[in-house]
Length: 244
Image 1 (tube, rainbow, N blue to C red):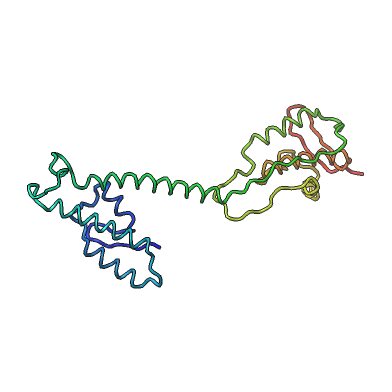
Image 2 (cartoon, rainbow, N blue to C red):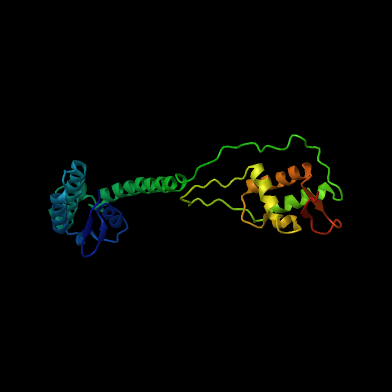
């Protein structure tokens, strides 16, 4: 549980006060212990259960600030401490050293939290093998199979598939099975005579779905449900429904 402190020279969470002092954004003379104590007492009066850890931390800091402030208000000749008599000693030095250590741990904790917030929303899918047709000896009449493979490779290298977004909140299953991909290709050919090979991949697709569609094309070829045609080596590859 956190609470805010409102001062003339500083407003923000109480645990940031150390950070601001370290950065010299708030001078020690501007810190009003009376105002801090007043707001603190008001805060704890509303608490249903006293947080002893917060209380002890507040009292320790308040005592430290009071000690530092009193030493800086006293004339140097009135300071009896042997260490304070040494030239160049700043009574704030010890506190600042502690602030530096505090800041390092706080920054490290924030960094770990940020990484957890990002990676905690990512779920990795285990690697799985895509089932290929048992009969891999597929022949295509009127087209060089090498051209088909090259066309498929160009699609994979394009930016036409979805890229991972680490900031998603809802997980949806988007991968097609080979059977679903076969149905996808057949649906594309329901109302048209033929479709260009590249146009099958116009929708935003994952890389897995692109592979599934390519395998589905090979399976439909094996089942003699589609034809693949190409006028020559430099024209687009087209797919059409096979007429029985």
